[in-house]
Length: 416
Ligand code: PMP
Image 1 (tube, rainbow, N blue to C red):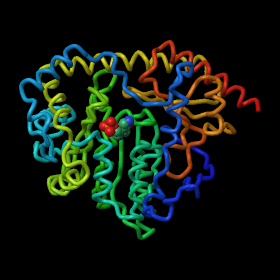
Image 2 (image 1 turned 90 degrees about the vertical axis):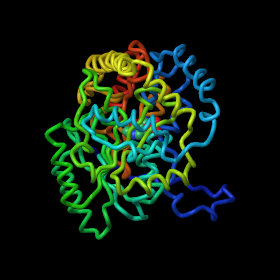
Image 3 (image 1 turned 180 degrees about the horizontal axis):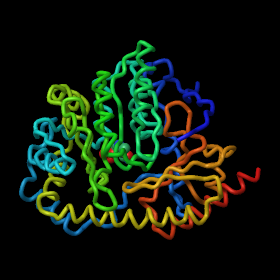
Image 4 (image 1 turned 45 degrees about the horizontal axis):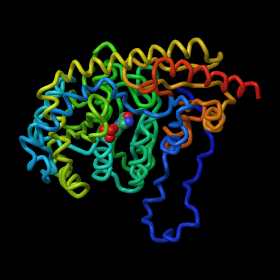
């Protein structure tokens, strides 16, 4: 993927804040994500939002869930509403191991730490490993929430290019060589191998062992973030990097995309040696993940056909992906290109030279369509010729209409 290099905007500290001289130095890296800033406008009903990454929960069996929640209160209310351990409840950790086995992972439940979504896992892992100035290698583009965590701990992100087969191994080698020359420590490779957010691509199976080997050779840990792995449109799954090298991979999982994002239940599977520190970090962050929510997830997994449910989600997303790809083919002007996701939520679009997706966004919103500009997915200001389009939430009709509006804005932009 090629991209031009706009000037990086400076973090927005303004002098109206009387607390300005009190903040810790690390807050300089904390800036509002471009995507969050968009939420307010993009959620107006007349705007077709292709910007957010909200899972579509319409297929959830709400009646069954409501009965299960009531049962938890009746059967185990005093446990469910009490503090629990920072490690997470044992039954859920067993079930999580069964889920990870679908991607070839053999794990002991003691090495699983339940988190408040995988976002908390990202924060904890960065807290454990990164001192200010340390390098984190990440795909370019990368998940905006991960970039936020890295910035909050003042880690420096070095991006590695992807192609339609995912992270490019030679790019990784080169980035590691360059990073080592700077004298800074490279702490880990952060990677989203399956149905990438935002790029929509999947790391080719043939590349997986190679990536693992490169990181081993360079003494660099891998942080594998896999919230979309079970959302392959053909039901296909891929061997997790963690299954190849258990001692050198921290794996992050989540129930946000396969069950319910609002419950905020995710997990970290750490190498055994790291687990204790992780539990301590979790304890200091939240004391424990919510017992009640863990029990909801656990009972749901034990009593409901959760694989059948994921299949329904996948079918929903596939229909929306198809609607988006056919609309892109039909409406987008020549010179645009995009990735072809085989699962997950996102398409990554590259627009012709001269169009700046960040500058164009207010005009798109006026034309009642929103997207996420590519610049939010890079730590270094790249991405102004890219945008992320999410097809997960709107109906297929709205997706088609959104792409039609977007195409009209792009065309007028190209005429300028
Ligand atoms: N990683 C990736 C790649 C994501 O896309 C997301 C959510 N959009 C997360 C982590 C965080 O997910 P959660 O905290 O809901 O588990």
